[in-house]
Amino acid sequence: MMVATHSESYYPARMSDDTDATLPGLPRLPSGSPEPRDTPPRYETANRIQIELTPTDLETLLPPGHAARLVWRFVEGLNLSAFYATIRAREGGPGRSAIDPQILIALWLYATIDGVGSAREVDRLCYSHDAYRWIRGGVSVNYHTLSDFRVEHHAALDDLLTQSIATLRHRGVVTLARVAQDGTRVRASAGAGSFRREGTLRDCLKEAEKLVERTKRQGDGGLTRTAAAQARAAADRLARVEEALAELPAVAAAKARSASKRKGREPKEARASTTDPEARVMKMADGGYRPAYNVQFATDHDSDVIVGVAVTNASDQHELVPMLTQVERRAGRPDTLLVDGGYVGHAAIDEVTARGVTFVAPVPHRRGSDDPVPVQPTDSPAVAAWRARMQTEEAKQQYRYRGAIAERLNADARTHRTLGHILVRGLVKVQSWVLWVALAHNLRQAMDLGPRLMT
Figure (cartoon, rainbow, N blue to C red):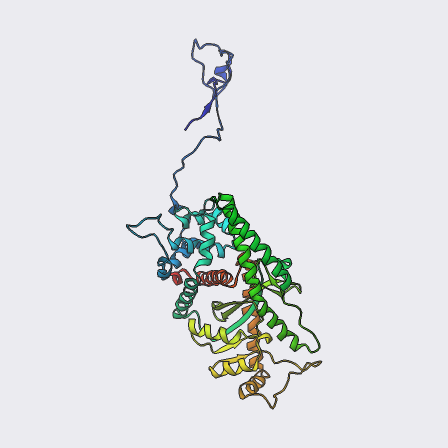
């Protein structure tokens, strides 16, 4: 290592023979020493442009029991065959070796637990933060690979969630005695100004087609890097406008159903977003209206483990039975299902009761009264039993558990698990994002219960 040096005499000053021996701690100058010359002092100073090669033992970066080690131990216990099957590079064949899926899964799980949702930020942390460096283990990653991996393996991620639930169920952590379902509306990656009516979308389609045709003509002689990027952007714009037009009938049907419940009101003209066609304008928790998705979680009461995940662009009304089916597939049949009034529907109550599940939800009140609607002549036996059940103190006490389970989970997911604002577009990609959140939440619960559950 090169060090900048300057000249300096060993002795700070020449002392007379009469005085230097009388001062303790100072050495006596040798006899016959020359007088100090008038030359610059010599000393070491900082040289920050030199390159240092610092040896690092990654294994010593983190103490035993660190969260990153527990995340890695958890990932090692998963069946990742679906991820390895997608690797195109094979032994004896061409192509660069792929990054081990274990590394990418562990990075995203740790980042989600850490509240990091940006692929660029994870990329930065991989080279500046000890925990991410330890997980990376010397393998080079970049934000593009991280971003693609997060949304490319929806089916495999869904299977990982089932594996995590099955493990916790086998250990007796998940009991399914009470399961609470609730939805939270999460801001989509689209602006309110991107929503267009059919006439405007037709105009946008013509403009997008012209832009695609223009970029094709420009590329007749071969595309430069910039021109290729412009061509991809034009094609993407055209695809999103076409998708927005295809979404208009579904939007119009939903507005018609909503208007039919409000007599005397005509349905508003349907609009779809050219940024994220599958997003819908929804009423948010603060009372405002913004493009969003409806994220559904089903949570086991005894363990706070997520046992069901769904993402829709509609209301909660028709999500009860599909979620129950999913919970049965992943973990088994719950004894009691706790939901709020948004899920109450007579057909859903009949189906849930027929499956042997106790349905707990508030009974609607009469208009202008605090009294719940009594049993009606048209009620089915299941609906009548639900109305009677909800008048008992036991059922009321069970319903009080719902807020402590579901609403707290939604708040934690928004605050600590990157659900404040989703940065991907489309239902499938948003579902993949939410699956990461659910996996990280379940892992966090297992870590809190003890490292033994990681094995």
